[in-house]
Length: 497
Ligand code: GLU
Image (cartoon, rainbow, N blue to C red; front, side, top):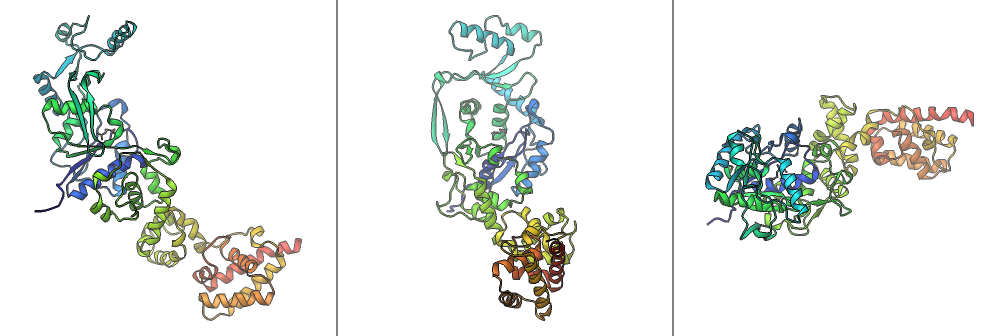
């Protein structure tokens, strides 16, 4: 006896029409996790049969996104597999073969009526108060035999059943029953006049051929699912387990859009979101492990993921919450790992070399503990660390001189600090702190005034890690140079005032 789940075969079947958006990635993630959880396979299939919607470069983009986020597929483009090819445009003869099978069974038929003729007939029917056409088999004025003899193009349509019921057994919603008599769906095209299959035909044939066990897709497909189920029934195939994943909303309850941050995954990664934080956050939109555990490693998610706990109600994407998750992951990251993740951002900003030296990486590793607590995005690293590498080139005197302080007092502070810190033989936090507190007292100034002036002098900014740790990290010699530069920057203002 084993209680291991049966290995599942799931798939991501994108049409190469655009980017993988953060909102749509969640369904892919659920599919991937289920395959991993059950020890099964996750397939990537490119649904590129709609030539009108084809966007050059989109496939490369989505492949790059999946790779970057770490959702590797077991079968599909680049890796191949027993069901190759995995591009639908290269599988046309497979669909033709299956189409012929349906035709031979009498459940699919050739229809020679053109689109404009359908429109015309429908218009007349509407004017007469009749419902629009559902079947295209035998229509007044359309001589199928003559058109066939003349070699005119045709579409192959599925004859939808007009009695009984079509039942969608959705794992998370339970059975959804459609009455065929009132379905009102025109017989759908399976093969278009150019010989290409429609989504319905190609996706059902491929899910069957590729032995997909669980189909996870957006719930916008529920309304057309009777077509898909009737295709399965027409072939006499066993249906996969259907899971229609609810849509993702923005935090204002509206459909997720660019305005809410529903941009491409690559944009998120470039901005410094970590793949593991994105995955952890996304999985919790509409799924939970136990209603309280939030932070889970990918391994834990794989172990714990359970399809039946996907909620059928819409989930909400909140970029701020994702940012919070990212911060949690960044804080928990081992320094040696964080250095590697941050280095490309520092290189891009010109703070360290494009191919960082050991010394540069060691310096970054030394500085990281000072900023790691407050980091929420990898991309913030350059702005939080650059002053350690680059001396302030100029000073904003408005901030170098704190409120209720005279420029002359600041110069005095800088000179006194330069002298006192220059005397130190041991350069550590306790010593610098002791010296600077004593100096504040000696000058009869407030800690806030003195420390702010020194912080601005040392870093060129008003916000930095703690003053003493910053000075220690800068080093004694560098600190003294900066204090003296700041004093020099202030002196002309003294002459003027
Ligand atoms: N090619 C379809 C799309 O991109 C896939 C839908 C499905 O998962 O079946 O919308």
